[in-house]
Image 1 (tube, rainbow, N blue to C red):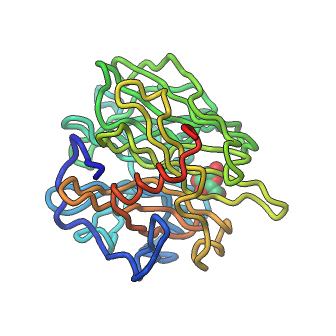
Image 2: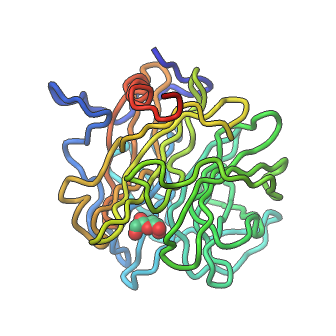
Length: 332
Ligand code: BMA
């Protein structure tokens, strides 16, 4: 039985049992998707977003693509983890010492990671029209303090580990170009203070399986389990009719997360439902956050669908870890 370590109990985690006889590692919420087109004024689509438990309910930072089709970030509230109420205003950031800064032209694919008593937001930020990682922290989801250009462009899909390892913060990221990037590998970086990052190294190249024959990147925040760090990822298969985005998983060493202990050869969730195969960008399953109940091992995974809406998939830590081990391509 795989157990979560240093996690929290979320007794009100969204949950449905697997359909009878279902064999795949993840199953979808029966009422997916949980967001609709045009949910509030000026927002056309909500996807690739991040939810965390907060004061007995849930809160998050959401990728909203506007009616101008430019992505931006908004705070969203949820009592039950299913229904999301977006704030009317977009997220504005202050410098670390509290001075106002102008809004960036765009921001997308946020992850929210709680480390000690701060919530860190990592997203794809805009520096001089180039994509790079933005990092900000908040305690209340009202005031967000932003680090000044912590990563060099071009980079997308940053995700922090939820605690320091041997005294340092760790980040997974996917260096990119300024466009739709026909490459992508997973890098690991270290920092003593969250502000200055270094020791950047590639820990997993794409092409280890067909579903990631073009690129590979991080997903939600890693989950600490007895075996190591359980990491959900996204991978892209380049086909003759375009990019196909699916979710995968691996397990990294707890003390040295540059070491991959297990790597699942198969996708754990690929686009197959209509809301995943059809939309603004067809065939996209893009996991960006996960709620995990330590007591039961239940997982509710939030993922973007076709760059159009947000859905939930369920599994348990034990079921997913068993699937990864059964389909491992590292120790074969
Ligand atoms: C990636 C990111 C995601 C998006 C995906 C598919 O490069 O930009 O935000 O979901 O492309 O369009």
